[in-house]
Length: 175
Picture 1: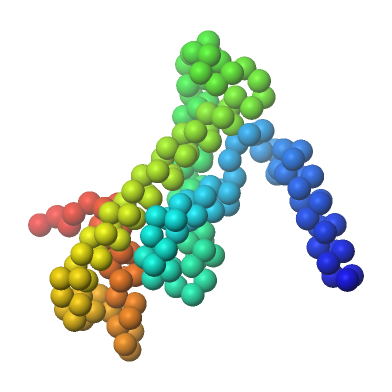
Picture 2 (picture 1 turned 45 degrees about the vertical axis):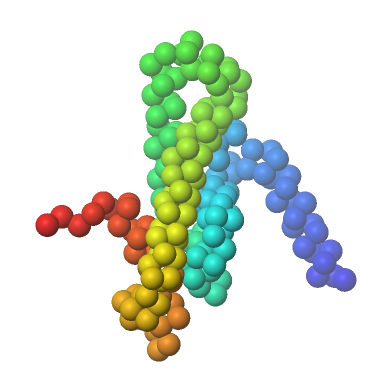
């Protein structure tokens, strides 16, 4: 019972801190990297549960968040800089689009990050998973031999999806 009470107090304190603007110095309404990474991972998991589990392994959600956190942080930073530049370039247009209150910058950043960090990678993940599924159905033995790297080659699907997503991010190899 004591342990549950401590967790309740910690949870209320965390909720109060987040409700009061989150981290000190953070702009009100600006998304946090952990929150955006969690949404990205949730969308990937929803897109294809089996591919998600195969790609990220035993603790899939935690591993997905870890692998996306750096990119999300960069996306937030870039979106914040872009929104700041837009506000300085044309304050009237910025106010018309996002409002003039304390949350205007956060609205701009969150919308920009959502467009950049969530929608595009989930589509790439879905396409990669489907391509790997098609390849596996065509010739399961060759598929396992080509992509599998553990003793029983059961990680082949996850390796295929990871490789396919990486190729779409980097582009096709140059000859």
